[in-house]
Structures are given as C-alpha cells and as structure tokens.
Length: 392
Image (cartoon, rainbow, N blue to C red; front, side, top):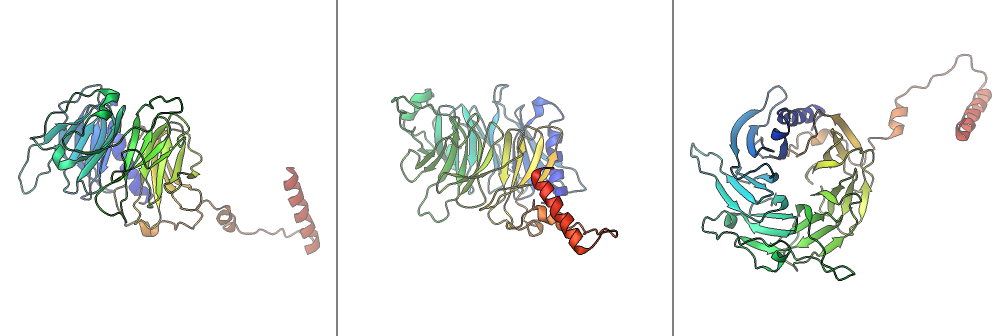
C-alpha cells in the first residue's frame, strides 16, 4: 500500500478508540469484498465498508454478543469464504453471522466450545478452526459440525484432566501435552497464540499448526501425525513468553514476538531465528505479513509505544523499517487487506532501502576555488581520513 492508504486504515482504528476502553477494538478482520469487521471490548461488533481516500467508513451491520460479560474478551474474528462472519470469545462463545443475500436474512447461530481460550483462528477454506488457551490444548474443529443444532452440550470442563477425555462432538483433532520435564513433572499448558500454516505439497486432509506458549517455546503440529508436536523449539521468546505468532510470506517462514520488544523471523525448517528487527521500543501488539504472491514481502506491526511500522521481510538479510507512523491510541490489531495493486511500486527485496551509499550519492561534490595543487589536495584528504580514524 501507499503511505496514504496506510494512514486511512490507521484512522479507522483511532475512531474505534475515541469512546474509551469500553469501545476499544479487540479483533479486526478484512474480507475480499472490501469490508472490515471489528469487535469491541463491550461485546459489540460492527461491519464497515472499507473507506477510500476521500470517503469515510460506512456502517453495514452491527450486533452484540449477548453472552458477553465484563470479564470476557474477543479472541477470534474472521470472514468465511462466503463472506459470513464468525466470532469467538475467551469464554467459548462462538457466533456465526450470516450476511444478507438477495434480501433474505438468516438468524445468527451460536454454540459453545471450551473456555479459557487465548486464540481462535479460522482456516483459509473456512472448513476448520483451531484454538488454544490456558490449560486448553491446541484443538481443531469442523466448522459446520460445530454449529450443528443437534450437537450435544459440552461436557463439564475439568482443567488439566481434560486431556484424557474423548474428542467432543465436532472436534476432529486435539493435541497432547509434551512429555514431563527432567524432574518428571507435568508441564503446564498455556497456548498464547497460534496460526495455520500452508499445507501446499502435502497429501491427504490435515493441517500444519504453529503455536506459541507462555513458556517461550514455539511448537509445530501435524494433525495427520501424532498428537504431540512434531517440533518443539524452546526459548524462542525471550521476555514473558510468546505473544504473537504468525505464518510468514514464504512456506518455511514465521514471525514471532514476545512480551518485550522482540520481533523475529523464524525458520520453520530448523527452528532457528533468521533475524530480529531492531529499533522497536514497545511490545508488539499485532503483526500482519503480506501474502507470498506479493512482489516485495512486507510485514506490518503495531506496538504498545503507539507506533505503526511497515517492515521489509527479506529471506536472506535483516529486515528494515520502511514506514514508522505514530498514532493517538495503541492499535491492538493490524491486518492486510489483500490489495496487490501497490506491490509493483514497492522496492524489490534485493534493494537496500537503508543504504548509506544512496544518500551520499545524491550529494554533489563541492570544490574549493582557493585550493592548491592536486598533490596538496590529496595530502589534505589523507590527513582528514587519519583524523577521522583516530576519532579526532
């Protein structure tokens, strides 16, 4: 996007926070039909038409989660491929909002899933969703079966013992806790963030899921394999555990942030950090990479220092900051709208946007008319170089 387009998106977030904490935006999603849905801290949600540069946002639809309390928060929000909306709270309140088609209005569907959730995400095809949370293992559900009216009520949740229970109706896969530690003690389950990974090149049904934990580890799951993670990379997050994990622009890339000011690119083949962005002063609240089809891979981020940043996301060198914009209130959510029109104007990946040589090349040489011979000028130049080396 151009700088003007990014400023327009930031204005939407600022407008959402003017009513105070009660109307603070907790989740945000954009559809392929140029619409955006926002979920507020008071349990309400709204759908807007994406504004243009010379137009304001237009309210399309609004509703409120009736089961929402002051202690709840939204942990998931997404558009389905049919442009319907699914929302989820940490209390396991799942709601499907049908969009009007041909003047026909369908009543929303509600259902219940386990409580104490920290993250809920919808798969790209909308057929499945996954969640995880505090003493809630990573779980994958069939979307249509979850909203089936004939589905039995959830059995009582029993905290850590729930791992020994059978799958709930509508649930198709559930992870198993990692092995006990070196003292043979059970490791606590606290999944803070998760994302679906690309399944290109795989055979048969299944998902690859990446999850971050409060203990600072990042785990990769293959729902076609064992219930335990196929990879468990420890100490990826340095401060306060993993806050955000998001699949990257490429097949073997992911971005991870912690509760400090660390934002890193992770190689999913080796579990090693490829590079960490520098110059970030606040904890990252949200990140949003562009798709793999984007000509120049980019990464957007918002942080608690009230800055929006647009980063480069190279594959072989350190990332840099392209745009740094201060906003009035902390942006809790950042999403990419899928617009590919500005990708052709972005700098190519192999271009060094922070190169000092480009700056100095634009400055003309100035000669002193009173200078002496060439030999004297060369001598003065050598003297100045020596002084700079000595720090004089």
